[in-house]
Image 1 (tube, rainbow, N blue to C red):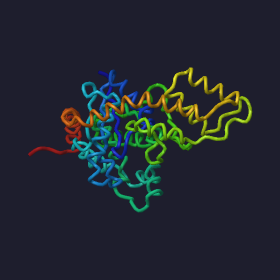
Image 2 (image 1 turned 135 degrees about the horizontal axis):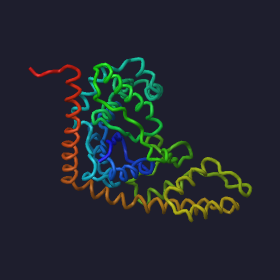
Image 3 (image 1 turned 180 degrees about the vertical axis):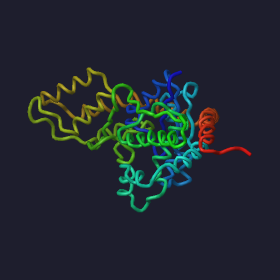
Image 4 (image 1 turned 180 degrees about the horizontal axis):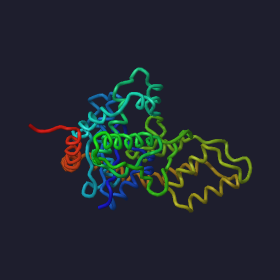
Length: 330
């Protein structure tokens, strides 16, 4: 087995096409080649104060969607972050080597402060430390992250080096970003602005049914159509073609591209085809999600086995960390 790969997702909503094409398909692929740890970051989600009544349901939903998308507990360690107390212990110890100024300068923290000035909690400030703990507790070599998380990964490298230098040890390797050899995929939203995301409300989710998907796609933003042959596509139309390239055959893409070029394109036809091709990919996943969500025994076994594997790995790391810090048994 090759180097350790780790990635996680917060249980704050449903997985959408951006998650699937941006990461999940690759996660399924690399579990055949690497030792992979995939976790549900429920501790991270506490910074937004989710309602306790929804908390477990959100964790269960993301777990079922992970599994339905193809993550295999026989090949990867799939676990819930809060099931591994070693993560929290390492978080405490790394906080002693993290400094207020560097945490306040992170782009993500400044963005959160700007958007939610009434909820600037300590968890937001030390978010990069907890993320570093997630990575370093398994001594991960690779982390699949988007561009928005590059700074946090760099901080994980800083904390790894700082711990090793401060205590004169070589406990932690420096983790690096994994881009799957082709760079990150940006999946656009249906509103024509930016990428698909939960907070933007512009996404198609893996749990959506056919009627919902079709309705969303048919309402996607367009314009009045091309005004001259071979004219460039505006962003809102380029977004639709980007989605089409992800889910449709090259022949289908070429057909609508030619229709654009000769000014005969009918957006209704394009959207109907796009909706049908999205459904062809997501509806089988949806069926598996519903099946897995109703199999409590299977989910309990996945969580139990994932916890045992994750804790075994994390405990080995914490043994070295505690020794370096100076903790000793009497």
